[in-house]
Image (tube, rainbow, N blue to C red; front, top):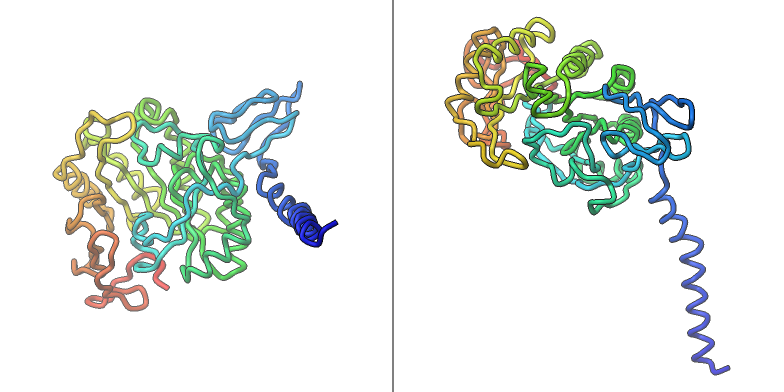
Length: 367
């Protein structure tokens, strides 16, 4: 046999061994399914998912409402574990969190899927899809934490789609994040059962919850969900000591009624505290509501005034560039303690969490 042929055969054999010993196992790991937490085995190999309030009963070979959790021969598996569809470095203000480490960044991650079907979803291309319908990149939890550390961001954010859907991945990452000295935040619809929420809350530093409306009718009509579990989530996060902020997307003609907004604000004050930051966000036509006009700025400003008159101290307007309600004002003296332009922080007048002008304590996580 000629030397050149021997060399080619040897090289081919070497490449095969490399693939078999190193690359093939890693590919297998990437596609390996993760057994879901929080489910109950039923008769006839059916299972009941206990992660979110839908409590789906899933026959063998079928998936739950979210299309992420699948019954395989009587065992429930999550199909999205580690399959990231978005990994970005964002300003913390984009979450939005205005009272949590302002001016810093959040290493943000998501997988496909959601357990709601909001007609106004802004990320529907990934939230309303199955894992196999979108491009993804598999990232092990430890690898994700290393990437976050390399970014120099102090925080990992579980966001963009619905973090509850990738609960097992979020929980594993959150535990490692704490060990690495970083912090965990999530932006969620809050549609989760209490037991998994309390387990996760032990590793959460902050959360922004979308309180989409304040009536069961609104949730049923626009999100195919219910309001009560979301309110319970807010109270549980408060009990668990997680820094909490709330976003309310105002849809013209759907949830912009003054009476409903006042009722929501009074509930927040009575159950979560007057110093809970509330963000009224402007709607723009998207997904299944393309024919609906953007929220008038006047409607957002009216909602903010209702919230302030109801006794809430920190009320913001989002998706309206340059609006004065992007700033944080001291509730005692009225001076600006955090000046913003969009997602940019232009100045902070706080020392040890107190207003530089009158020394009033401003609720938040500042260091």
